[in-house]
Image (cartoon, rainbow, N blue to C red):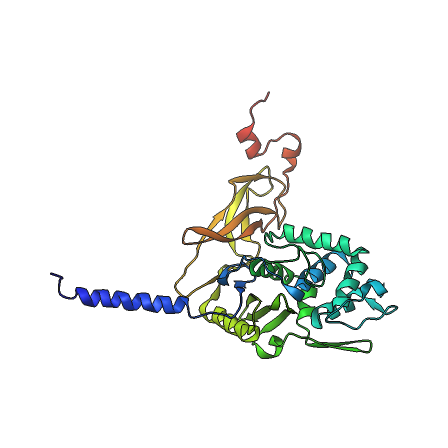
Length: 369
């Protein structure tokens, strides 16, 4: 016979499990693949088939812009040639047009010019193949394990694909570049006689939206990468083959901002430890966090912070010198870290430069007269 109240306990447990199941399924999308991450830490806040390799259409141009910004100069001049002409979305370039690389990148990212993509590639690398090689080198460097690029504009091609997670990794990296962030957040711009209006409607529809890129081919479907910033936290959202992408992105971003907060575990410049200096004018120097140590958390999560540094270092020590690290742990797993740096100097003691007669020298000297 069951004890009194046991059914009430089971019923409560059932309701709790039902609540948790509803919360877990509260967010869903029309996308074949989707992911939502926090830009600085890379923490995944939502994912759905995030590693499946798919056609990505014009969100390819995020990589094109990154490579251009890292390997070209914004003021580089370029004269358009017949080799830059391409099918599909266009900046309406004509052979003989003269533009700067920065203007081409605006045409690439705002109106998704396939001609602008080829012009960017030729401006930076001379040959399209050489530029595409840089795209794949960048993907490998960033750990984009489910990506390979065959062209700079995203037109469907053999061996051209990525995943939602990889595109989120790329975009989080790209947003650390101020020029990239400035360009993709531009609603409209006039370049010569061309008026370019950003195709990304989320700049108008979504609170805090700062870009990033739309895409479409019949084979790939609608692809979209967006980013938004609220209360100091930036989220990146990616959907692939999504017929309702504008609404899905707004829902996912709202969910992320409502369910998570960006916790600053340690503020940059805060002194956390000190280190002994062997042969220095100061016996020790304080160590401080080089920058804010932040991580997105739900309401019931807490971080544990541990500072690590050697017992001693040799002089000289200069301010800003990296000597240790500060690590944040969530449920016993390291999730974020920043450098610890010296916040004061310690030069070499003059007597130690010749005879090592300082107290460290006397302590560790093994020979003598």
